[in-house]
Amino acid sequence: MNNGAARLLDGNKAAAHAVLLCRPDLVAAYPITPQTPLLEQLYKFKAEGRLVAETVEVEGENSALSAAMGTTVAGGRAFTATSSMGLTFMYDAYLFASGTRVPVVMVIAMREQTAPTTVSCGQQDLMMVKEGGWIQLVCESCQEILDSIIVAYRLAEDPQVQLPVNVCYEGYYLSHLSEAVKVPSQEAVDQFLEPVRANGNQRPVLSTEHPMTYGTFVVGDLYAEYRYKHCQAMQRAAGLLDSLDGAFAGAFGRSYGGALEPYRADDAEFLMVTMGTASGTLKGVVDQLRGEGVAAGLVRIRMFRPFPRRQLAELMRGKRAVGVVDRSVSFGWDAGHLFIDVKAAAQDLERRIPIVSFIGGLAGTDLRHDLLEGAARATLARGRGEPGEEVVWLGLE
Amino acid sequence: MQFRSRFEGPWAEPDSLYSVRSGDWRQMRPVTQETRCCRCGLCYLYCPAGCITDRVTHFEADMTFCKGCGLCAYVCPAAAIGMRDEEQYR
Image 1 (cartoon, rainbow over the protein chains, first blue to last red):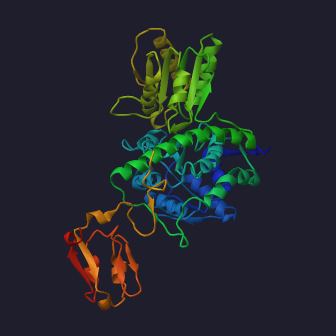
Image 2 (cartoon, rainbow over the protein chains, first blue to last red; image 1 turned 90 degrees about the vertical axis):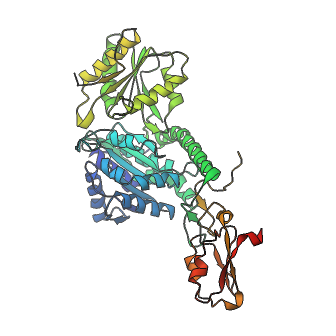
Image 3 (tube, helix red, strand yellow; image 1 turned 180 degrees about the vertical axis):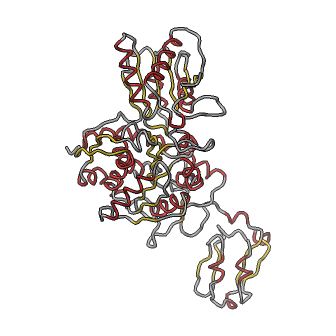
């Protein structure tokens, strides 16, 4: 097994190493905070002669994703990355990529969405595109960023999936935070990606020998047919991620649990649910409460789209309450986005339980241990029958 | 489930940009006088549905996809293409 030599890398550099290992044919991206150092590292690799990929200095994000799509429909492998307003600037290309079934891999170094203007961390940018038909993975650590990008290509390019994948990580907390990251060998990654390299020649691609049309004009029932196929492919992707998690563990010795990661959840009295870096702090809170004899548990959502609703419902079954921590705001619901999904998934339970939305960490505010401990204790209290608010803004009095 | 398209995504055979039978929309049909065709290929280049085929003696639109827009007749320098009322062919 080759689980890689440890290096000190921040999230952007970890992502760049993953991209290098996946041997893309093209990198096209436009710099935007906090994703910029990822591009700097990729261009450094190229200057050193290590990254053998065409690079395109595009004039904006819409062109970046369009160039990546062009490479991909011609049978190549492409990478792009963005954040926040760059993501919304590429929105029509974003929808085109998923609807046309173009397996591009794109990093979102997550950031708040203007306005109010800021460049700080948040998950609002991801939430702006959550219904865009992409597969979306959310990472907790720099190691997971590197590993997820490698898995993302295997997932995206699988003939049963053929969908674009976002690998998302929080700006600064991961993009600029350094951790020990194991970088696998080129041979090991080549071997892991071999199945899609072979299939890559079989998926329909643009070529002069076998001409075909991409991006056709579609109306009526045929449109519904393509939407249906897209939804089915999303569900197949959910199953494939779970099996790839095992394949990845076999090859590299690391496993993340597939679509979601339960932490001390099985015998828990109540659950906290979140995505991204707040999970680490919440694991500490769970351990602390367990030390006090309180059966706390956590579920970290890794695959946000497609949403692992059935697995989550299974984990919520029998619990007395669920608290959901969101780093984003749904204006229409006056709640967090993940909260809405968790609440919908809870409809599959036989018994109604209190579900509480905690909004915090907006614009880079620390989701501190004390804040999350308060959230967990409030959820526990709701589960034990005490009254309380459905939506709690952490840090706002 | 019975699928109409053999493709997983909105892709299509190369004979048309459309994966709908846009010929159903046609109210006027292009008819070419083979002897007048000067083989310039302008109709082939201009056809927005990309449905015109080179028949060596002349160019011909595929009626499955030709929506009867008349651009081919408009650009033809030899006036070889005339637009006829589709009713005559029903």
